[in-house]
Image 1: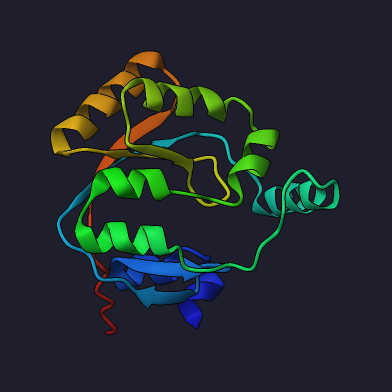
Image 2: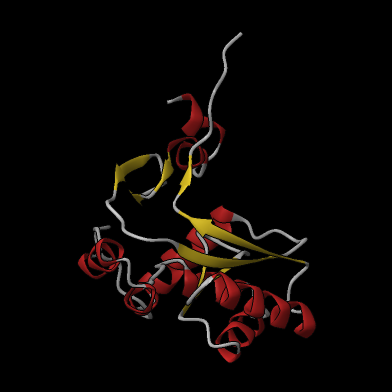
Length: 173
């Protein structure tokens, strides 16, 4: 797939709506959802090397600090999406690369702590980082979390987004 050769997240941006991806992100399956979910994304001007994060993951597995499991679709996430329940979704959020990303960039914990202080329903490192995603109860709550993160000066850019969102339209001349 051409989109996956550009970047692991590109197929999802083209697909849009709600999808579940396993592995590198090119293998997407549509997911049924009800309602809207409101997110806050805290980004950094500096990057975090994806190969380095995977290397740290492998190191932590070899050291016995974490257990590598076969990627699978979380039943708890799917049930929360179907129910349109942001509280259940927040409780079900998980990213296997979060621990390794935090080991390489411990300052991301300040972002996560600030989002928790603003009562985000769930907070996690997005992908291999350094973006942190926080789930809010509502659009207004997302704006409040974003304002708190800006006031705490823990991120270079703070954005809000609502999902699901339509995918991109590709126009071929």
